[in-house]
Length: 315
Image (tube, helix red, strand yellow):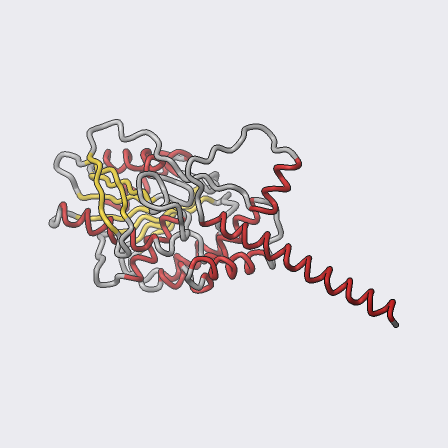
């Protein structure tokens, strides 16, 4: 009997230890997903076994996005503040006799310079452009990203700035991946305070749970139950319930004309997510597919198709 009790005690403590280790790893992985490290430089070349073990335990380091080259034309450095006090930065490029202004929002781990090809495309069509750094990226404040949740405030602040510059002009919002979801969230959050003339959204994920699944797919890790556990842990860390972070629900409140675009080889965002968002949109809408594109810039992948789709929408 004593031997049996000792065995049961060791088994119980082993179980507790395994669960504690799993919780520790999960906490670190979730934290790294939403927090950036300033000045981090990852080593080049294949990681050693010790490095892989370190990343597995402590999470993969997440370098803070740094702005790339500024626009190759005359531009203005502008600043504005989100409702929660976060200071944001953007590049404004006005054009002569503009047809309006397009405000551009990057994706997760992106920054405003990454949107330069799209901004050039909009300027060729006669629109001034405002390329925005989300909180935690580039020249904006902070080292944290909520993957589109708090960034809805950033969208509103950028829209307000663009609208005030040209009250009598049209304003369009362009977002990629996380940026597209942040646009949808802002439209849902501020239904009376935001009235853009149109939205151009590229590869938005359906929910933050879908985004977690997509990230795990690209890492060749099992999607479940890890996706649910990551969202739950992230909710505790970041102060909002991630399971309610739902771009499809936000889209149901959008009556603004919308161009939705998606790459058919996207490993992160599924056709099911795209169709759900498209079906939810209440206003005039168009869906454009890119047969050879993955989760990437469509203007770089298929510039002719992108230019035709955007020009047709903005005519």
